[in-house]
Image (cartoon, rainbow, N blue to C red; front, side):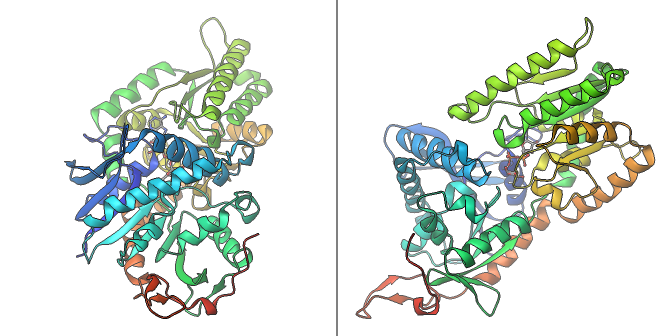
Length: 490
Ligand code: ADQ
């Protein structure tokens, strides 16, 4: 069997089961890598004053990880800058928060080049290479330029924006062109896939090839949706652990005679936390008889705290929670408990199980694994209700949740009331269908279907010759440029 090399910005394998890695990508990848030989390559999380190609190799919890440090200026321009200050807001439809600085994109290109230089010597002829997420879009092209001819796939964990949004990026064409160095490009849902196809066909002058591949920029690729799932067995095991049971008991004791409503998110503007709080406030306003009957626990650890938009958001959330509690609290109770820290995954499992309702209401989200974790942690005999934004990728699969528009506080308030008053029979019926979907589309299915598709999407390269027909100038092109009409850059 081929080795699988997974590449992502950060490499964060939990040292022990239950420990919280930093976000959905890490959770999914450490689960995916356990059954393959190969390694996980990426940034160590440390910065140095000067870049060096020196790698660190370790084996953590059955996964081999190979890491490299970043130079301080790379970290600012690539990570805080282009990845989290430009691409993240842009891909989540927040052009009002997007930084369009040129130096950021230069840092982004530089780090992708350095990653490729460090990784290329570690690649063996039969390896499959799987690159993850918006930090590393140009990595495939950089590897190709260094002569890597292995199958290389790319998976985007976040949404792909509509062309009208993407074209606000000055070098959008270059970014999309670099994706065509991959054999396979995967998205979470059909919606993000269609947005990508729409750019390629409408903006880049691309076309469909007869075999269903997309062609543009003198190259072809296969694009497909691969919805990410949970490692269900692992998560259910965590939910039965003593740590989870203790967390469950603590939450149950704290919400006696009250229904626990829970939200678990990174403190990120894409997660719709402010809108959710306004919705909860509307619910309290409209349902005075229920004010003492509910406790809303929002767990939201600081994320990307060095980026200004995140600092501003934190200030607004603090103020909003304080204001709502000041209005609706009594001497012995307050409706909101806001916790600005993360919890271990096993503790979260216990908290989910104690909650009658989970609010997952992002304004835009690639998938959202919290929605799936909440359902997986429920007691089948007395399950809670998932309230889910229609703008989360998960809403395309989890149609039996209470689906809401997070921009409407009335809809949030009505949805919450519906969820809290739902009959046991209906909760069970919805839970059964949701669980069937989670079982069907788990993380192993996601991983294996991507890896299989990558192996078959790979095509031998036809070297593209320069004008004189001597040296191959771009050894990766698979179709002649004359097959594709390319409009000039706008
Ligand atoms: P994230 O934006 O990080 O991931 P999500 O899918 O919800 O979002 O994953 C979060 C993971 O981190 C979950 O496993 C959750 O348990 C954990 N987590 C979240 N908040 C936490 C908290 N407050 N304390 C402790 N743990 C917490 C990105 C994309 C998503 C996509 C994933 C995976 O933005 O859309 O679903 O990658 O592809």
